[in-house]
Amino acid sequence: MLHCLPFISDDGEHRTLHFSIDEVQSMMCPARPFDLEVAYTKTMMGFLLTIPNPVHILMVGLGGGSIVKFCHRHLPATRMTVVEINPHVIAVRRQFSIPDDDERLRVVCADAIDFVPDVGPQFDVILVDGYAQHGLAAQLCSQSFYRDCWRAMRERSVLAVNLDAGHPAHATFVARIEQSFHGNAVPVDVNERDNCVVFAGKGVPISARGMSLSWSLKRHAAEAQVQLRPEFQRILRVLERRANSSL
Image (tube, rainbow, N blue to C red; front, side, top):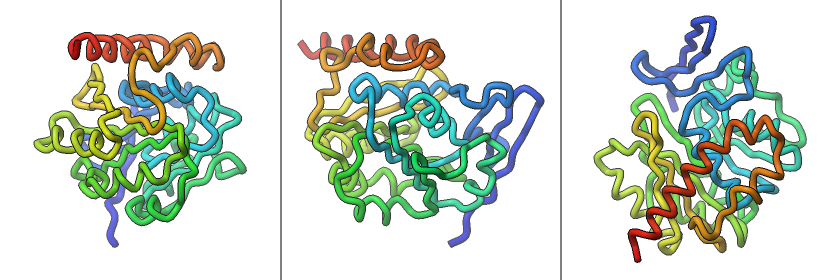
């Protein structure tokens, strides 16, 4: 299979990963390589509101590794498996300060469509951020893939999927997640760009009542709290409004 060759832009303040000049796949500040620079990455970290100390995270899509680096730095007891289909993306990992594989991090060059069905229920968090040259990877938005994610998750676990809210089939993709997770899923629009992160729970409720800001953040370092608190507060407000509107 032929894969698109990414390119890197560096203006001295930010380093960005691209498949095309019009789209930024990932962004890093070299002076602060472990910070979350793009808004949706902070939203995706909202899984910590439900699973504050995950044992094993599966990340679909490496990109510039923003979430991978953040988790590796701030979740020292967590193992992380990353599945990336494009070997050219993996090849530039050091230019984005992504740590080498170790006992806590493993990057696998594979198609998640083939990888996820074979792993068994071992993950308490699955993060899906699968974008290619032309946007969302269609195979990662299928009903069968979301069902495979369900089967790969432990009894108490959370899925977070980064979708394009401007995609013509966005509502269909959200409905597929809701169906696979028996209605226990909530889309949260991101303030910047057209991203929408859908949270879905297996054995845990996706609701403001089922999530705790203080319980989640107090388990993490001040550096992580500063980055995540404003976005976590916003996520909880979104969930509260959703709950109130359904009354």
